[in-house]
Amino acid sequence: MHTTHWSTNRVFACERADAWSSINTRYFGRLRVSSLDDEPLDASLDTYDVGALRMFSITAPAHHVARDNTCGELPTEEFYKLVLQVSGRGVVEQEHRRVELQPGEWILYDPRAPYTITNRERCALLVTQVPRALLSGLKLSGPLAGQAGHDNVAGLHGVFGTYLRALSEQLPSLPDGVGQAISESVMGLLGSTLVETFRRVGEPLPLPSVLKLRAQQYIQAHLCEPDLSIQGVADALRCSRRYLHKVFETDPVGLERQIWNARLERCHKALMNEVHVGRSAGQIAYAWGFKSTAHFCRLFKQHYGMTPGECQRLSFDSRRTAVLQ
Image 1 (cartoon, helix red, strand yellow):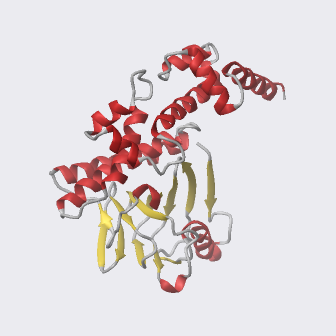
Image 2 (image 1 turned 180 degrees about the vertical axis):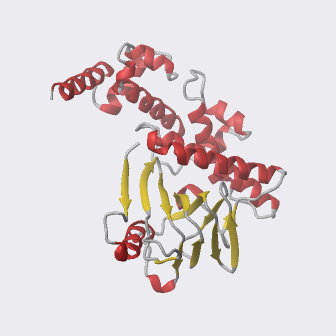
């Protein structure tokens, strides 16, 4: 998966704290960063565009980060921040609440409100910027942290943390093109966790935003099934077909078109991948839920401006040219 790498290793030791502050400012807005270690601030940050999400893999020595109203505007205010403590121990403080994070625990918070983060030992973090539009209607009165315990809410929190931790380990080796599916899996798990969390404390999370996340997750998991339909999605989510349409009515394209577009995207990636060079366009189409080769070819050309066969030949020619060079 494509990444951008940043590190303080290439600057003088005395300048590393300022360099680390500049790297963080690029993505998270102006922050006050101070080292809590006598050693040079040896830190790195890798960015990943994962569908609608942007993820950051961070390693750093003991340090303190603060953001308050004197730090100016954020680069964008369109995100919540989701932080997983991969290793080390951290403390997040916001809205008069203090949350201690052990490895495998996570926290969701609104970066528009002042906060501090303290890691008193070397740490690794997975930070995810979650577009507010994906959690429309959500209002955080303070940081929301994963919970320990043995009930259903704590169980969901644990599953979500485990998934994020595994993802943090695999991000560098994941192939391009899987970002959207991963993004929807992350948001589906987060949505389910938020529903149960807010239900426990009697604060309902707006149903449409959660239902949308669950529908997208269900669709991605069943794309290869020829009988996948809007009615089937509605039945699985225990809502009416009409209500499901209403949840997606503000999207640029309708839900049925989104299903076909998702299938086309998977087919396009398979056609471009040399692993599938021996498979016909029809075989690939059937593998992703199309029932008719003619229907697939017509939709593919409308979407990509070329036939599936032309797409395969273009990919083959590109690989051959690369080898010859």
